[in-house]
Length: 255
Image 1 (cartoon, rainbow, N blue to C red):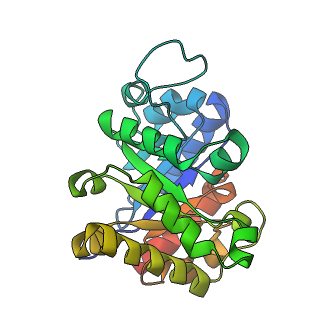
Image 2: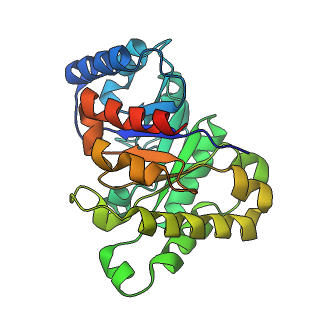
């Protein structure tokens, strides 16, 4: 079964409502008529309503960068999956490396967020990846597999169909460094092996696994042409309509 490429932009702590509206307008113009690949963006919470409004009928999905696992209560500063869905989100990132490194996320809390997303009708995008120290110690695969095991605990094959994986080597996020296509493909193939062993051949064949980590128009084609890479989770290059469009076009040329 052929897996459609997905290019998703993570805007991180950038673009308030005004700037986000401008960027969304630029993407809508630049990507009008693009149907060969799936496209999505995750703006900051405060800009989600404006971006949802501007991207209506554009084919570009809008999601959030995180969520809390409770539906309501005395949890100052948090947002629930139901709130995000009501704001117009269709997906949400969980377990991004910056959440793990800077805000103490663990496999257990990532798993709670993932199940909360599923319960709210959102499509979770589970982020996984190793640090440079872990890679240099020869632990890259075991770290990624443990993140998969913890993050997907309690998920059945039916729910798995709603989940996307995003492999992001931590040492290649925002550093200008990027895994070579061969390095990225090696880990994506290992992820698919884990899926085969845990969920069976159907899941391993159909689940989308994106690559993230300093993806740019210049290196997108080399990465996206790999057999087991099904798209990209883009950071810095997603903050500019021209560069993000370049990545989408590279994907479309391969579709």
